[in-house]
Structures are given as C-alpha cells and as structure tokens.
Length: 448
Image (cartoon, rainbow, N blue to C red; front, side, top):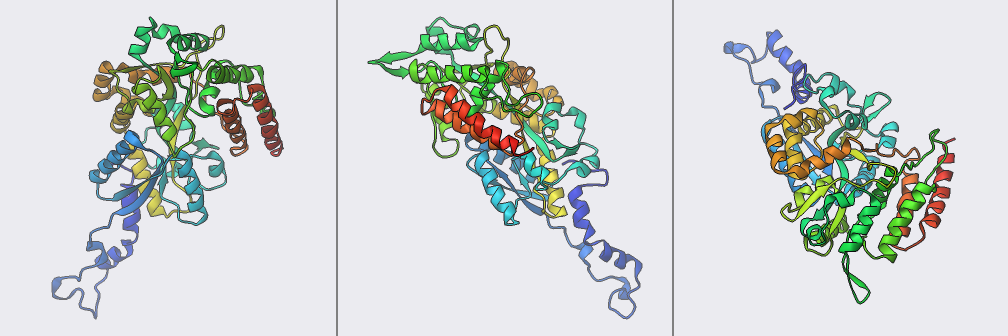
C-alpha cells in the first residue's frame, strides 16, 4: 500500500467520521449516565472495526489482459484491509467510455476507470488528483516515464495516472521469414516490407491463401505510417486540418493498394469488442499470415517459439519509423465521495508501484510506467530470456506523441470513417481523406 504523509488516505476519511465520538469518550466524565461508572466506559463507534471501502473499477480488457487485471485486483485486495476493489470488465476501451458517459449523466459513476478523456477533464467530469499526489510521500513523480505522466495533465493538474504504456509493433512468424530467405533487415522500410510481404504471399486460382502481412483494422496503423513519413494532423498553428496532404494520401493509398489490388495484405474488421483483433492474431499463430501489426500488449497472448517481434518500419529516404507511443491511463470521475476518491487513488497508485508495473509488463508486453521498474530483478531476468519485451521500449524512444483532438473527437471520427472507406470499401485514399478533411475542418472552425 502507498503510505501517505498523514497516513493512508482512506484511513483518514474513515476515521474522520468517528473523531468526535473519540473526543467525547476521552474528555467527558459522562455524569448521570451509565458510562464512567464502575471504572469502565460503554463501547463507542471508535472501538468498532472499520469497514473497508468498496469501489468499482471499470476496464475494457479481454483475454489474457483481462485475466491479468483480475490478478492485480486480487493482489491489491489481499495486500491491505482498507479498500476492496470490485473489477467490472467491459468489451473494450470504447464501450468503457460509452458506459461511463451514461453513468456520469446518471450520477452513478464508478470510483475509478481505465479511461482518459482530456476534454471531459476540462469540463470537470474527472477529479483532479494533485492534492492526493502532493500528500503522498511515495509517489515519486520523477520516477515515472515523463511522456506518460504528462499525457494525464491539463493546466498543470494531474487528472489521470498512467497504468501502462503502449505502442504498436510488428510480430512475424520466424518460419515464414526463414522459408523465404528473409530477415528483419528486410522490413526496415514500408517499401521493403511490402516487397517481402509479396514474396511470402501464396495465391491459388487468383485467391490469396496465405497473406504476407496483416495490418490492424482502423486508422491507428495507417496514422503511425503517416507520422513516420512526416505527416501531421494539424498545421503548426493548429488552425488547419492537414489530413489531405501528400504524406497522408500517399501512405493510405499504399495500404489500399496492398489490401485490395496486390492482395498481399488483409484485415479483419467488425465483430464484438476485440474480436477483430484476436482474429488477426489467430491468422498468424495458425499459419494463415506471415505477420501482423499489433499492440505491445499482445505479447501475453503470443507464443514466441513461433513468432518474434520487431519495430515498425520507416520510409525510404525519410528515416526510422515514428509510430505513436501512448499511456493507457486511469482516472477518478468527478462527483464521487472523498472516501471513494481516496480509495481509488490507493488502488491506482498501487498498480503503478515499480514491482507491479514491472510484473504487468512481463505478463502483457505493455511498457512499464516507472523507470525504476527496469531495475526490478524479475524484469531484468525476464528480458534477458525474452528480448521481445525490449522492442516496445526501443520504439518508444523515437516515437510520436498521440494526437490530442481539440474538437472533442470529431477529427478522429472523420479519420475513422475515412479509414473504413480505404481499408474496407476500397475507396481511393485521396477521395476518402479529402472528404474527411472537409468534415474535420468544419469542426475545427467551430472552435474559433
């Protein structure tokens, strides 16, 4: 448990309700009552055992990640007697935010949630944890990966705490590369990756039976590739949406061509929650594709006797890849009681303790949020035997910061629609992106 300057935050809140009774018992003779007679005092509230504070924690994780989160919750609950965390699993991050929005409106929000929305924080829908942090001797902000901690700050206040870091990396079947005389050196650029994917692809009767690569459905993989090419979502002054620039059009058109014309790549889309994600992983693990682009957090679901990991590529003449590295953060919705807020803080900071963030990284492949976790003996021993765990850290060293949508998600929504048009409907990238730019620019102009 995290130790506070004035003791556990939860204990402070719980004790507050009985301080008056404690004072009366010690400072009053209680004349005319049974108390104080026969040299003894009647039992008071202060002598009764404190009841633990029970809080809900919502999180959108499934598979091995969901199981590992349950283990962490159980570990926390067994480590102390002041707080009981009740984990409530959602289908994915999106469903968590949707349900949270409804819960906030109904004033029935959980005390803690694996979700972060800076726009909501700016509107007062999340609690500022700065006072709790200031009172916490063991927080050690300097030990956190600064880019992750800063992603939870707004106007100098800490609204969200990083639980783990993530970046999308490349996983490949070792036998597929060996069979085709390839090595990770053949995947240093997107152009080279496409050529290697074409070499590994198998077709029968004009139909692809083994894909050379599988990008993950959605805008994120293609945005990573755009950032690696030098593209941006907004102009430097923040007034113009630039998603129809050559960097965007050329990159997204390459993906459209690889998927629909060359048929060397494929995607899974739709389904419930993370269904599409796990179908993509299954294709590689079952020998139906040579590799895929996925989360650093996939490592807990993969067999590294079969696959290995490498960083995302860059582009010829541009340099190393610059995919996004972001923190998955948790917050405390505004409106919960001080007692619940203190309990939630205890849980969130327990999760990020060096030994806990290190073990989470070992179990899941996600990036630890504390620098000292790298000195954890179990982490060092694991990384020596499992070098794939170092790939996300290496990539994060030259990664891009996540895009913060000033419109409250409208630009991202336009990009999501455009990505579906390119990846699923085979719409030319230029058309899809220009339509998205026009929509996004209108939303941005509304802020003026």
